[in-house]
Structures are given as C-alpha cells and as structure tokens.
Length: 148
Image (cartoon, rainbow, N blue to C red):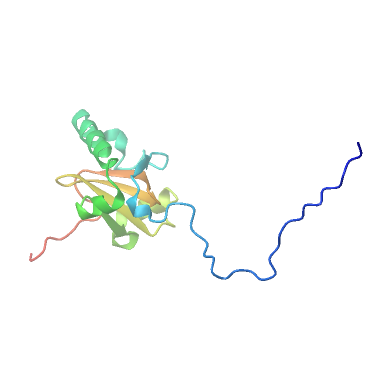
C-alpha cells in the first residue's frame, strides 16, 4: 500500500487576539511563602560569628529558626520579628566589615528578633535568608529609645 502525504496543516489565525493576557507562572507574591535559610555567606571570622555561640545560645537560635520557618515573611513582619535596615544606618564598624568580606554592594540587611537584645542579621533573596551575623547585644544597628 503506498504511503499518503500528511495533509494536516496547523491553523494560524489571520489576526492575533489582543484579549489574551499572559499570566505569571511562578509565585506571584513572595511575601506569602514560607522562609528558608542559607549559611554560605555567614561571617565566620568577624566579631559576630555564629561559631562563638554558647550551648544555650545555640539551642535558642535553632529553636527560633525552626519557629520562623513555619511563618511567611508577611507574618514575621506583622509579629514584629523581622525588620529591614538600610546599610547606611548600620554602625560604621559593620559597614567596614561588609567591605572586608566583599558584601559592600548590598543595600539592606534584615534583622530577626531572637530574644531581648539578640538579633540575627541576614541577606534576603526572595524568601531565602542567608545568615550573616549573630548580634547578641544589638550593636550592629543600635536604636535609640523614644523620648530619651
């Protein structure tokens, strides 16, 4: 039996529809995603190294990190556990430290409230936070109390 040619041809409309709107296939609002942690940029040689934690501080930090993973960025901000701070508002020594570790091109850091004065400073990319410093005395960006 001889082969027949395929007579199917694709349909190409003469005019394109302008009513179609492309939709974003990814995550539309990153604020609604749960957060994740990275440790690759952690400052291990600076004065706020996470390697200098006591056993109690280490346990406290891991407990808080696990609790934060169950929250999205919007929930963390509403609970006042996450704050964004422009780099120019940091203490001069820590801005210099960013230059030393070649992270002087970032514009802002994010601070997680751990307990009392303790803060965990991170870099943020979408919903991923890269841990940078452990600040147990709130020295990276001290805040003056109101009405003092």
